[in-house]
Image: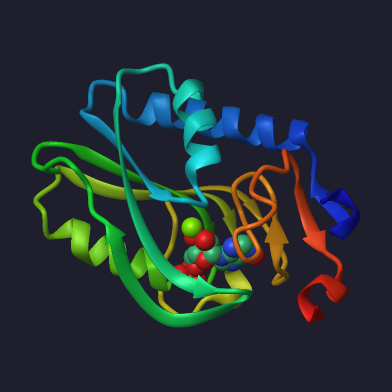
Length: 178
Ligand code: IMP
Ligand code: MG
């Protein structure tokens, strides 16, 4: 698996420091609120499990699955594959995403979840690719900006592979080609 990686963009340690910084910020901002973390499967699950443990205030969690990607190119359509198991009424919802790319997924989710009467709704994304934006979405919490390249690891996949790499890497071009 590691032989498919051209270079490491963020080490395990850099990711961990970023997640802890976000956890501290969120804990301070949501103190006294009714925090619900909504994670987007599958890519954000690794980030979610680390972030929730870096948050020091009470919170509840739920998961949903959406799909807008196939390979390395966005198909441009968003589909709910698995919906949330709970009502958002009365909750301060924080959507936990792995990466904000074209913005289609989060634009869609903000629309759908925003209609379910949460107290508030905001976005926390570990990675942001501002150059790739198609929809006008701004995240409230951003871990790190990344260049407009396809990255894998720490939950992020290429055709479902590489999610279990503990670091963030850029794939060798021949991996795409083949
Ligand atoms: P968006 O709807 O284009 O913003 O894409 C968001 C989703 O596409 C993310 O949740 C990821 O699952 C996937 N994605 C976008 N860029 C990358 C990447 O560089 N590597 C792996 N997955 C990505
Ligand atoms: Mg994802």
